[in-house]
Amino acid sequence: MGRALLSHFLIVSNSSPRLVSSLKCRSRGGLPSKYCKTPGLIRQNRSLATHNGCGFRCYCNVSLSEPTAPVASSSSVKKRIVSGVQPTGSIHLGNYLGAIKNWIALQNSYETLFFIVDLHAITLPYDTQQLSKATRETAAIYLACGIDNSKASVFVQSHVRAHVELMWLLSSATPIGWLNKMIQFKEKSLKAGGENVGVALLTYPVLMASDILLYQSDFVPVGEDQKQHLELTRELAERVNYLYGGRKWKKLGGRGGAIFKVPEPLIPPAGARVMSLTDGLSKMSKSAPSDQSRINLLDPKDVIANKIKRCKTDSSAGLEFDNLERPECNNLLSIYQLISGKTKGEVAEECQNMNWGTFKPLLTDALIERLHPIQVRYEEIMSDSAYLDKVLADGAAKAADIADATLNNVYQAMGFLRR
Image 1 (tube, rainbow, N blue to C red):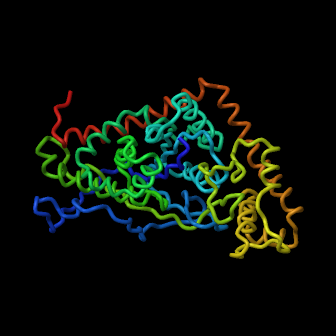
Image 2: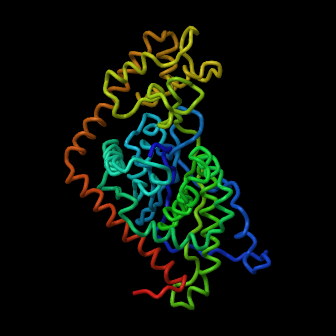
Image 3: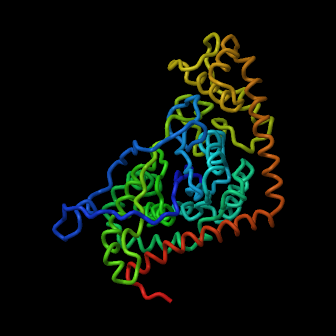
């Protein structure tokens, strides 16, 4: 369960999926050759209108401007955003500044579904005694950060059965060669023991595709580690549309046209990528062996103070941004700017003549001030299990209504006898 935060944020609309046109180039088996090749790198969508203010999770170097998001539709029907996160129960400052803050902003302009991807958490060996606990803790911490259940549907992935059902249906149309060439599978299977790893490690990209396609995604913001998986999702949607959609589906009594909308990648502009406290060139990560390398959102005041006091710095005079020879300095100033809400210019002017002995207490106080309300709210939520259970149940019910509509279309198009 300590794997990295899953990166599927997706923006979806309530309109019917667009019809994917058939390609003229076909393989010897009659299927367009496009659906027989290995998924490649994603193509960046350059046509999206954006504005400053709110945004998505980003995997770029630290920038002091907030990432941007697509402009919300001016129509009365809001577009829908869906995102998933691993139930680690341990969320750090990098997660908060790089993703959660942006998700909170987006829920004001879009219909939002947010789920804890507990099914993805079992692809590697895990502690069965901790899975349920970590799932609740992760839901609570995101609610405490500002996910508003009156605006967003918050639920647990396994509580919406359509995710698993659609995965099985998609698996029947997924060439094994596509999965064998997934880079993450190769890397993680080697670390986990080669042939002894479970099949789920190979097939979890199909579950990720199910998570996305269930909600007829228009755009999927992605990071570097998920590009290949999104391309598989796009290819799989087109493959299923070709095999079962269009006139074939209509002959079975269906609507016809495309079964799935083919999602477009949304590559976020530069945003907050918080680096390790022990290495300014490495990203702050939950999987790093040393807890000293990160500020966890639930760290007590004394722990935060100790981590900042001991964090890696340099011996150069003054503090400055953007000096490639001082990555730790740039990282700590950037954290202070993002936490305090000040501009880059304001922070540069305030801190340029400071030494580390003056700056570290300033940063510590800013961190404690920002994180304390989150910690208080988290404890309130965790102490009220009935409230948390209701939030998750209500969210699952809303999500199931949306997901079941897509699933029923797939069953029909694939020729199943329905009850």
